[in-house]
Image (cartoon, rainbow, N blue to C red; front, side, top):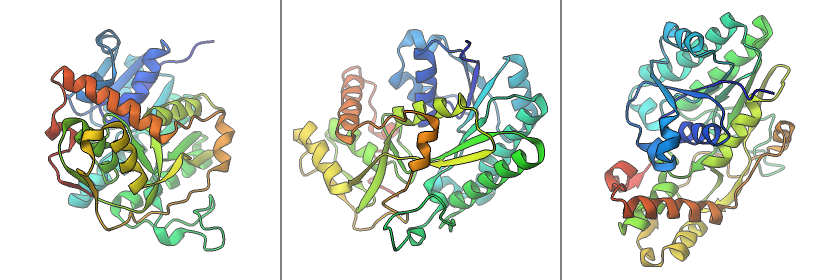
Length: 333
């Protein structure tokens, strides 16, 4: 049975790069679609030979015709939609955020509808659809049927995408799977509201001080695990517009820093934590995620170790820049 031919939008971003990596490693044809041109994140986690097998299309997700043309020219069967602007960029320019995050997502659904693709549209939603107040006081966690009350534009856009996915199923039969990650980490996660824990690993390897912009506890998901979950979703046969909370490990930021210091002893005392917490629930229900199959969860210490190993290799090759990794931004919020 064919594994399909995949389009990954936002392929130059962190999760996009890891998703491309997973597809290339299993020998599945993949086309990346991105408005940017910097292949840095891909080059950090891919071997040169693998990178050479990737087809990259420079395209604008806000332009429906460019998406349609790419689907047609490359015979795409499966779409994983990850192109988006992160929280800080949406805050700085809400109209641009809405154009990319909402219009861009509608364009993907519309292009798939017009071509009658049968595999589900898989897209990244976010736990930013919720706020800390959405926690169930009886269970102490965010339940899967919680009503969302997003605290920023980015979260509002994600709620809109989930609603549009529901309408596309109801009115035109386009199936979809949305996944809501919380704090994704791994090499390539160098921007966005929850990038600080990953940036701290790079800073430790570089020997630079760094302050993570939030404390408390959060649920972590390793980028490689997220990529594998997206592929499980794309190969599923959903009936409807499914949306799943991603699981992972709830980890106190103090324990995260301690793990970095264990792995990079010279960094002891150089990684600090801001005295604020993320505006999201720290405990998340995700039981229905099992519908997709055996969803991987890498222990956070193993994920930190794997990231540090890649950063060390990049540093040894002269390819680890503090500015590129976000280390020069003293605080990540």
